Image 1 (cartoon, rainbow, N blue to C red):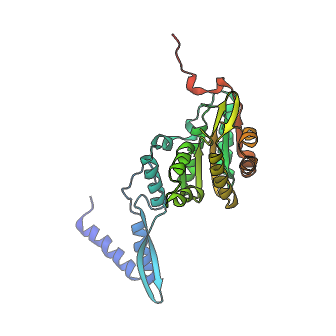
Image 2 (cartoon, rainbow, N blue to C red):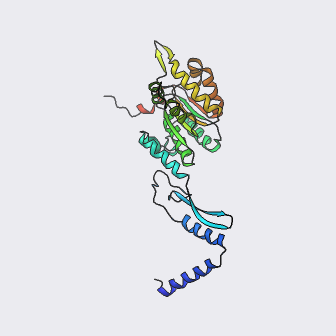
Image 3 (cartoon, rainbow, N blue to C red):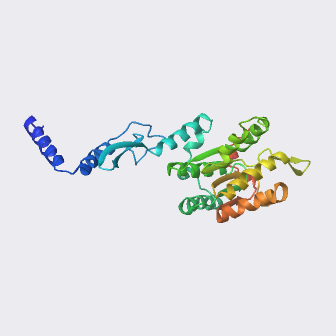
Length: 281
């Protein structure tokens, strides 16, 4: 253990070295000290390497000849807020999905996983869609991508399609309707889960669409298409089905923005992992 005189000696040397600094260097020194401190915000949901989980960052502020230390809110606070809102909305389980947890036992699953990884590596402003067979892990893959983008400080919002359309219908004469729509149409990254679920139904062997839902789909997809806002989509409907039975413009915009990142899983009950563990007595 160091003696008191040794500690005081170090303190005196440090004070002397600080006193030799310029005003800007001195303020920068204390800024660096504060930024090196470890914070106590929740690391499980988000471990911020920028502010070290404090929620703020110290900066040097200079105005004319006056140099002071100031703080600014770290970008992770917006991410933490979105994670909290997502948990409150009931999608807590989706926030735990990771690509590393996607099980690959068949060739098609490996192709899906590789496509998701390539998207995260070369994303840019491209969209990502995974369409087709129910129970094939579409939601898990899309959630994992959304979570990864969230950790990259992107503003990500989750949408359950049926909940979105039903609420818009209830808000038909509500003054806040446009504001609610804009929450999804203007957010930096939107994940639409089960796109067109409930909007297209099987009527005696023929697919029948809800015209109101089609209008919502076009308005949402078109606005995000025009603004080049990243959109992640999972749906049981293939691109050809969306084109033939829903709206050609909607299908075309999704296909164009996704490019090679539109993965379609051929409908085959054997690919439904939800029934892999069933026990029949």
